[in-house]
Length: 145
Image (spheres, rainbow, N blue to C red):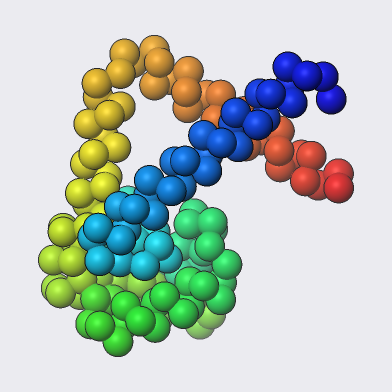
């Protein structure tokens, strides 16, 4: 690996780590575990309900982590699981869950939207296009490992 590319991946990894640390700090400030924050965030991006399989796919969390966090959120009365077919479930926010989401995940989404709204549209499109390209390329490399 050339020196400049090694520096680029180090910079990328540092930035990704710092971004994750900020989201962790936000979760703590809002009184949530990281996994609960991610799950509520994922549900809010879908409305007030989201198929369980989509939460696993979109959140980046393992099935075990999702199930553990959902059990806690369910015990707290924030979510309920509804059958959506013979082998699928939908995770729904309860009324208490909607209030929790308003105080937490929806505030995060609002902050992110404000950041993107402050950027020139061309920068947003470039950022998203490059991120999608990196994701596609790393998926291909993962398949080759």
